[in-house]
Amino acid sequence: MDKHLRHYLWEFKGPNSLLVIIVLFMAVMQTANGIGSANALTALVVGQFPKFLLWVGLMTAAYALYCGLMGVQQYQFSRCRQLMNTAIRRDITARLSNTSYEVFHSQSPAVYASWLTNDVHTIGVNGFYDALEIVESSFSVIFAAAALTAYHYSLSIAVLVLAVVVYLVPKAFDTSLQAHSLAMTHANERLMGRISDVLSGFDALNLLSLRKLLVKRTVAASNDVAVHVNSWQKMYGITNATIWGTSAICQNLVLLLTGYLVWQHLVPVGTVNASMNFAGLIFSGLTSVMSSYMDMKSIIPIFNKFDQVPVRDTAGLEKVAPFTTALQMHDITFAYSEESQPILKNFSLTVAKNKKYALIGPSGSGKSTVLNLLIGNLTNYTGTLLYDTTNYRQILPDSLIAQVTYLDQTPFMFNDTLKNNLTMGEPYSDTAVATVIQRVGLAKMVADLPGGLSTMVEKDGHNLSGGQKQRIVLARGLLQGRQIVFMDESTASLDPLSAQAIEEMIVTDPHLTVVMVTHHLRPVIADQMDQVINSTVFTTTHSVK
Ligand SMILES: Nc1ncnc2c1ncn2[C@@H]1O[C@H](COP(=O)(O)OP(=O)(O)OP(=O)(O)O)[C@@H](O)[C@H]1O
Image 1 (cartoon, rainbow, N blue to C red):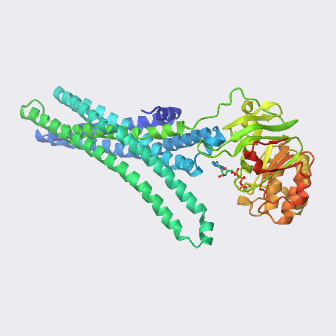
Image 2 (image 1 turned 180 degrees about the vertical axis):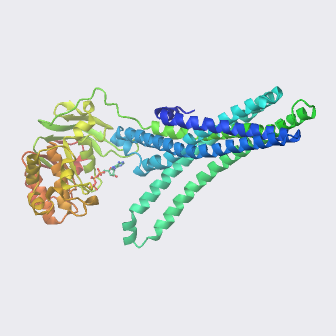
Image 3 (image 1 turned 120 degrees about the vertical axis):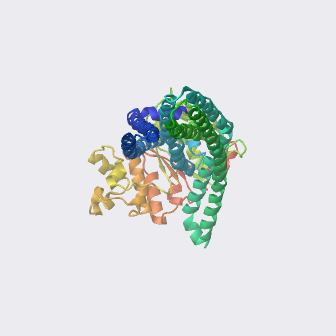
């Protein structure tokens, strides 16, 4: 069994053990039913009708109990499965939250969504459900084999030999099934990516009068996944047909042997009934074990895929406090991949404490890339980045990010109170909150609101203006003591007056260190800047000191 599956089964050993106990009792009832059926037939053949009635009564009671247990088992299985599904989702997201910014962004969020939905579902069906099938079938096989042995030893030898055949036949399909399964999970990721892409582009398609692309692209993506699912299903079908075919042949061989034993008067005639019943249970049980075992193989590549997300090694890294002198880039060369052109070539820049910098220049020239390097999100550079005198490579990434307020065009608002949107649930004093509100120019807005700070912010901040949202994000950062502000075209979608007011408020604050990426540097803002850097210098070996 896959080690991950074992891990989750063990984590919830209490509920899983209860499930196994229920399944054990079901197997006992099933065997009792088989014994009753054989004895009833024998009693009838030898003319003992009252005994026949007794056995039929016992059979009925055993079967009724079996059915009751089956209902309980289904509920208990669902409980166990949901617990384990949540644990898998917990571990996947814990891994993602501990990977680097670059690794996280190497795949689209839709891929991760597919892991957390499609893949977790597949693990539930082909992992947990099949583990249960294996336990259930194993109990049936063991009890039925023991019961059959009681009739004649040769029957158990025959069953043992044939069981080995049933076990070996499906092995031939192992590798192929795993490969098809991996291809299917990747196809599911693509489906999720394409569908979420086209759905989020609805507004754009609407304006382009191309709504029909919504259908066309969804159908194309669905056809792609269908090819892989069908191909896996074909392989799975072939495997199952082989397993079930082998099992049916084995079952009839046991029946032949029983017939021979009855003919030779070595066993009573009711043994034919027992043999059909128990051989049926044994071989359908073994078939089910093997088919579940094959299914379980298909989840190995899924777990391996999760394991391949590298976790950041933060051992020995330093936590930084607010900086005292400067952030420095020395001879930085950076490209997003080995094949692509460098965005920066031997570029140097000093961002001194409390100074203001504007990065201007053409679209795509690397301005946001500079911000992402300065905040520590991008690590695949050559050269040196310094936080005061500490090399970025020695800094705990989260502690660096905790020094910066990053303002972009889409400030995120939580569907919560205004106060919680500012404090993020931390216990800041009312005075601290009031001071910050004053500092970012929100005091009048808050005073005018009937609910004040308790006013609910709607989903995506629909009841706030773009400028108000920018101010709230800045206030959040100030409350957390963040004295560095990176503005990435943050005011681009605001009306000119609001945009200028926010920019002025930030660049005139003597306690803030600001790097502003902008396409529209207003003269009044430019006047406040200590340096305006044009991105043309990014690739021309330039120092901005
Ligand atoms: N994650 C990424 N992976 C690969 N290439 C990227 C990535 N992010 C940006 N790029 C590329 O790097 C180049 C610089 O992008 P960047 O966003 O830094 O430019 P910019 O000057 O900020 O542009 P704009 O003014 O349009 O926002 C662009 O060609 C962009 O396509």
